[in-house]
Length: 297
Image (cartoon, rainbow, N blue to C red; front, side, top):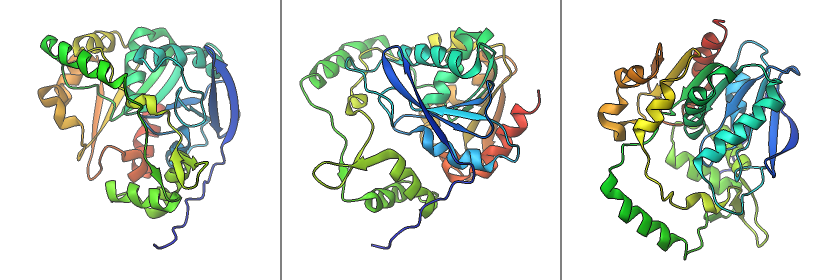
């Protein structure tokens, strides 16, 4: 197996830690010190570290703050599982720390983008601008899905979820590239080292809490997400990947017009030649879009 080089950051991150609602959260800051950073929200299984590619691609020396959600990366784990509204509460408290009470600029990817958009409707006074990268919610559920979902959840409670282990970071990096051929080798190694740590018995293990694999017993209700989106007052941009693995699952709900019906004045951009991890694949192009939008103020 060929030894891979690793991506070298241009803007070095500074780490800090803060207790949020009883769980220690790891924060990374990039750029000049500021009480008004652009707040970066990562997706499921990801960590704050991999925003490095996007941060480095910005032409302006903007201040950034990214943090690991509870149960991911270097943040603490929850003993009672993970419920989506918890992320809204964590973000609410973290913005008080990061932005000193001023309206924030939010940029989220996938799960982080979903959180950013819904939170922007729950607390419109706390958000100045919001960008969602491939964060557009889930397919609609049906009430008749509830019995089976509860049954599956009860079964999972009797099992011990786990993430697989890898021989070394190089093996994990190669796995990442096989799953996403657009990911450059040096970036794949950077992501591998952000997502995993050496395991006690040898090899490397993902740092995310395996409890994240547990099924959520509650059905996703798109109408409730839409009701929150409709309360957004900040300028909002949704960036979609032309080759998204997840957007087609939404059917008619995945059309730009459908999103604009919920979010007043929404700007929708479709980026050609990229998939769901667009900020890993083409960070320079994503940075140009996001930077232009943020600097329109």
